Length: 98
Image 1 (spheres, one colour):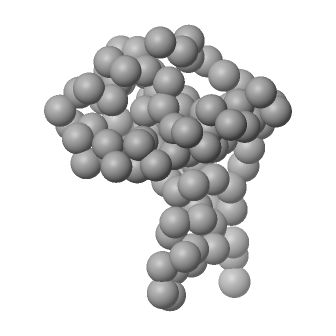
Image 2 (image 1 turned 120 degrees about the vertical axis):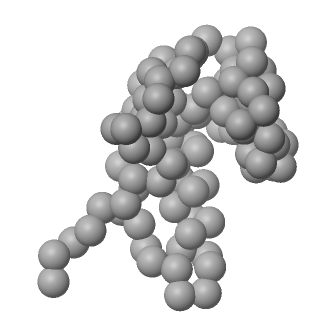
């Protein structure tokens, strides 16, 4: 059976909105303007839960993008019957904190 790679929350067909240009970049944690967009309203509880944890570990070479992707993978795998998702890390921090 072939291994499947699921890319949580990303599609190359996503419309690029500033400040993000597509793909996981951690902007939901790093950018107040990104999280203030109405389309991201469903993500507010997720952001409120993750941001303090990210603040604790960001000085240990953990990018916001990696943190969000790992949280998504863990969340999916924690669901009954949820698949294990291969998560690739080491994304550079591309966003400035605000």
